[in-house]
Amino acid sequence: MVLESGRADARRAVEQGVQMSVFADATAVRRIEEGRYAVDVHPGYCIGAAPNGGYLMALLGRAAVDASPHAHPVSTATNFLRVANAGAPAEIVVEPRKEGRTAATSLVSLVQDGKRIVDALVTTGTLEPGTDPDWVGEPPAVPVPPLEDCTGARPPGDENGFADHVDMRFDRTTMGWLDGNPSGRPEVRAWFRLPDGHEPDPYVLALAVDALPPVSLNLGANGWAPTVELTWHMRAVPAPGWLALHGSGRLLTGGWFDEEVEVWDSAGRLVAQSRQLARVPKGGFR
Amino acid sequence: MVLESGRADARRAVEQGVQMSVFADATAVRRIEEGRYAVDVHPGYCIGAAPNGGYLMALLGRAAVDASPHAHPVSTATNFLRVANAGAPAEIVVEPRKEGRTAATSLVSLVQDGKRIVDALVTTGTLEPGTDPDWVGEPPAVPVPPLEDCTGARPPGDENGFADHVDMRFDRTTMGWLDGNPSGRPEVRAWFRLPDGHEPDPYVLALAVDALPPVSLNLGANGWAPTVELTWHMRAVPAPGWLALHGSGRLLTGGWFDEEVEVWDSAGRLVAQSRQLARVPKGGFR
Image (cartoon, rainbow over all chains, first blue to last red; front, side, top):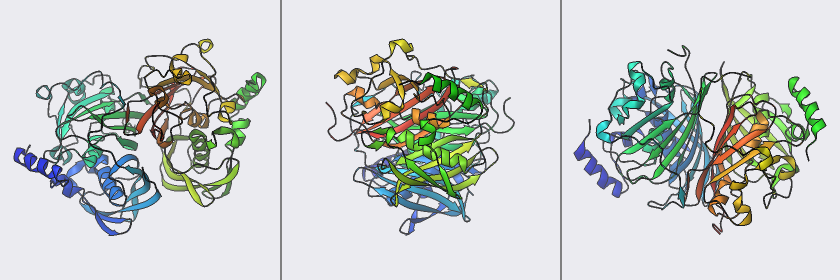
């Protein structure tokens, strides 16, 4: 579902610094008092019954930036402790740690029913749009194929909301696991945007770095993989349009694996980097 | 200064699960009460006047593991807030967040003179030694050259302790910045061990992932680069002997750069991975 007229509205809204969309509503944070925010965990960004980690990081990021003198969540290191309850209220607590001219840091926690669900160390800063990099490495050696050659696959276990709230087009060569033919390489590549016309911003990047199906599926692992820790860095202000997501991993051992995601925007900029450490669920391999 | 007899003693000590060394003493944590540890910030692991971040992470890791039912600091996400005072006492506070059968998480802070110096989210787990990986990526395409072709360079600003407490042999092609000829690529490669005979363990890995000179020096940046955030993952129990460190970066822009370090042990295992986000100091470029 792609709302083209919505996208035009959204582009104007981005130019004005405001976006109105399902995603903006779903990640709204309401300040209760200094360092405390009320949120509703939206039911539409779930993998199965579990709200997506990237969606929760978007919530944390919005609260952290609201409580900070800086504009962007430059670095976010996240521990996922418990599964959040979707469709239920929660609270975000922002504890400032240090405020400087270039960066400010805080400990940000999502709390629900008196339990900590997610902890994050968030560093905020302000990135200037359109800055030319002093140095940038090569884009990933295997690019995401042209959009028309990619497939809008709906991974199993993803029928309950998340797939309806993102528009992802996958490199088919990295989706063989869907048909029982995992590629044998921990890689997933896809185009990504929001179907509600919400253009890329820092919180869309938070969603994007945890949006790919686990790279472990291409190594023959069964089922979804719970993230233990995910750190992501916002590296540039993203341009409007599609984002290219490159997911890869280095090591799967003893039930632990890493997954790196690079996000490149439509202007060819590296706009976000992440690494997560995750677990292959019990049941192991096919 | 390499103490070969010390190394033989150390190897026996590793086999017995105990190591006695300068590094072990320098990273000792003394439990005051549940979740509180007294430490002395050793003066011998400083870059200039600032205790090295990896050394501080080793301290945090030892306290986190002592307070945990698990054996290893599997994931450590660190915010560096202030420069620690070397040669002075400090306290480590471990706040447990969640304890599970596979992993436990805690918020761990180094506090000195009533101020938070470092915050870290630490996940502990237990890795089995000698586990064969289910999948591992290729070692870095440019290997560290043979030891005899590497140089024990002492970087400027590194005359006050750190260089005396590590034994590092650098790939000369990545150290051109020392002579005013930066390579133009954000890469540094080196062999690493401790001169006191302390064999690689989780805390040596914490030191190793932050031991290289900043890769930004090879892009013509001046001076040391303060780390804002560093996340590292311990991926396997390291074998005795030299560690190979591969440092690289993807993007330097607006004064921010990333640095990834992979650590491979003498048995050819990927034992640690890190990424840090750091600042190019004021004064910028040559």
